[in-house]
Amino acid sequence: METLTTAQARDHFADLLNRTSYAKERVVLTRHGKRIAAMVPLEDLELLELLEDRLDVGQARNVLAEAGEDVPWGELKKQLSLGQ
Image 1 (cartoon, rainbow, N blue to C red):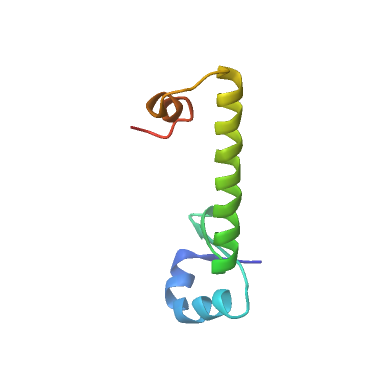
Image 2 (image 1 turned 120 degrees about the horizontal axis):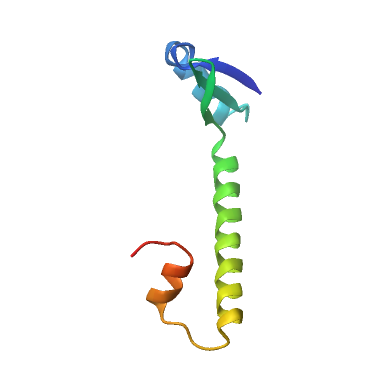
């Protein structure tokens, strides 16, 4: 995994895009020496989203099991911090 500054990434954006999409490389971007973002292949993002969805389902099941009864959707969203 390569680490580049945002300025370097800007100068080589097309190459980085090709490397992440075709070569499946991951690139970490830094600003002022701090890691701030990453360029990853789309498959990595899709896997991350799938894992997040599974965690959300697990949390929902736990809340329902703890309640032992029907929980209104609004209350469930509130308990899972999903907003209004």
